[in-house]
Amino acid sequence: MKTPGAFTLLLILCLPLRAQNFSSPRATATGGYLAAATGVYGIEWNMAATALDVVKIETAFGINNDQGYGDYRLLLRPCARHVAAIFHSGTRIDHLAFQIPLPANRADRTPLHFGHDLFHEYGWGLGYAYQQNLQNAFGLDVRQHFYSNTFTSNKFWSLNLSFAHHPSFARRPKEWLSFGAAFRNVVSYNYDKPKNSLTYIQDGQIKTTGLSLTTHRSIYTKPDRRLEAGIALKPTQKLLLTLDLYLYYSSIGYAAGFEWRPAAWLALRMATSDKSDQLVREERVYGLALGVGITYKFVAVDFAGYFPRRVGGVVFDETSTGAFQIEPNKENKLLLAVALAF
Image (spheres, rainbow, N blue to C red):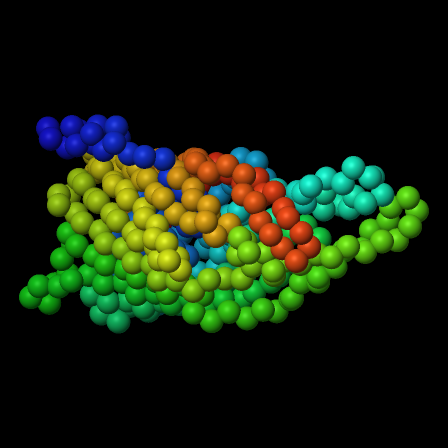
């Protein structure tokens, strides 16, 4: 009878979450899931964790409420100890920027004064994981990054390394404890560099204005190296607790979540987080994730919703082009996954 009470208490105390990368609904609804807890992991969040599970095939989909950019995941376990995945992230951190001040003389105004998008978007990715033994697994994945200011883009491929561990006793894994870690953007390759000028037509004349994506002081324009680590505790068969930590330069983010199983076929999940915006260096985003999972024999269906909230307002940035006013955006997200463990 204590479990429903604990669930209600956690529900009341949970705070709204911040923007984050997305993976499977199970991972999103439990805070990101860097730890390798059985049955809950993220295909791209911690590729190594997938190797410690029993799922043979998993497909996942996601959609944003505003932009409609889709998330796609396909995970395959072709043989014992080996897992492969292909994914496309529709996650897009999108803000609107206006050059200021607006000149009184119309002839001095450029397209930059009327607003343009600043965004960081993930593209396609490939992942592989190997289970060394019952306790340890290793993974790697490569993925695309797009940084853009509407008129020009900065494009990268990056390499991520991951690790998952179940402590053991008498050569048997402990189901109540697990660890996970990921080293993001260990190596990045800039395969399409941005242009630094904008040509436009005004009053029938061709004009050029200075434009630089890479000299923004407040905006990330390339994948940042960072360390992420997580732990999961399972004090009972019905309750699972998770905590992930994220190190961004000098700042630290977190995601905390839980999963409660009122029945063998039903799982209820919830998470909160406080993380870096991943585009604006000093911007923080809070959010709330809710999810539910249904299991029938060897089929598992999972659903999750993510609802961000920002505390900060307008951000002001100085570039070689001049001053800009940046208005952060936010996007709710819905995810659905189907997994087979036959």
